[in-house]
Image 1 (cartoon, protein in one colour):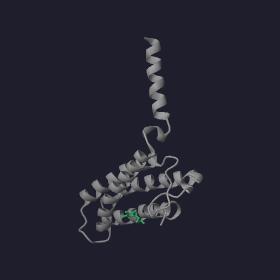
Image 2 (tube, rainbow, N blue to C red):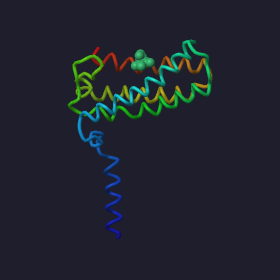
Image 3 (tube, rainbow, N blue to C red):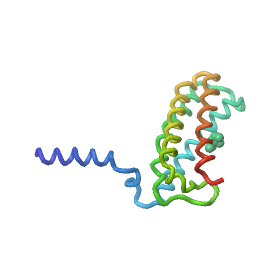
Image 4 (cartoon, helix red, strand yellow):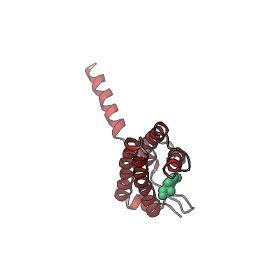
Length: 149
Ligand code: ASC
């Protein structure tokens, strides 16, 4: 029994420590996963943009809900950037995602931090505007460096 418990604990520890790549059967699955995450994130982020830019009326509850989704989604897609999934077509990741991984990971972390602030500051229009701009800046920085135009 003691042995079984230790084994279960060891497996649990290993599962959480496994690299992100282990979550996916095939590289295509990882690509599909990360694109899905970014698609959902962009949908909710654009609703915030519409409010921040006055194209739809500000609604504190809706803004907060959308911002919380953005902040949650921001945690997901980066696990899908597995080796061997760089591209050359528009919108695909450049190879420097993997050769300059520390910078890429720092950019992901920045998005996660700024989107958490977005969720915390979406209750007022001024708060939303400032945090939206800061978050959009983190999107753009990574796109400029790591995404094929
Ligand atoms: C969006 C969206 C992005 C970012 C980026 C910010 O609404 O879909 O990818 O903002 O355009 O520069």
